[in-house]
Image 1 (cartoon, rainbow, N blue to C red):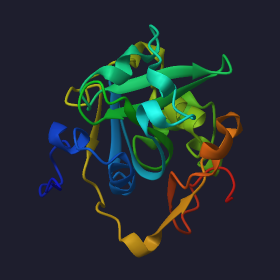
Image 2: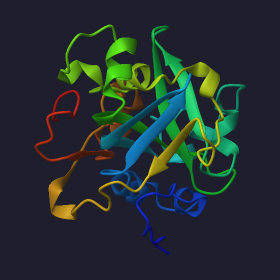
Image 3: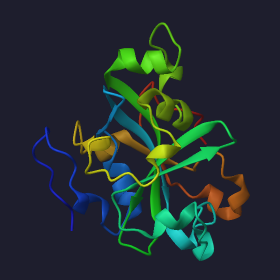
Length: 209
């Protein structure tokens, strides 16, 4: 059952994350505001690009084939918490765990359009002016928002990282589904159209496949 979100000032409720269909959730995240209040610096950005990972039966998912390690254990919790991991030893990538416990679904937030606290984002990225590389891409997005590995497991109902409804739900006709980026190791699953973007938004990262 779809969760109704009415008040734009409130946090997205935990019931939103604990629904069954990760593909629907990944699309409904578009237009929402990702918010962080880290080191006293409030930042917000509109989510413009997501990637869905369908748990234990998705070769691109870290929890594929019921894999359980200290890093992936977060996948088996109830939805509504953060999964942050270090990619290539450089970039922290921010994901949202969805569905009920033991289902191991997740959504990677790949890009945001800056909305508030842009001066803090620029400072964190050592940039002088706003440009696409500020937050178009999962690694730079996390850096701009102040998100790192210490936020692994953070409750999205808390006051460090949360989501607000923003401009959601985004019109379906303005959403494009494409294959995910950087998951060629997943074989045929790499071709699944589980990446969702807002058509024409300049803050979308990467390429269209």
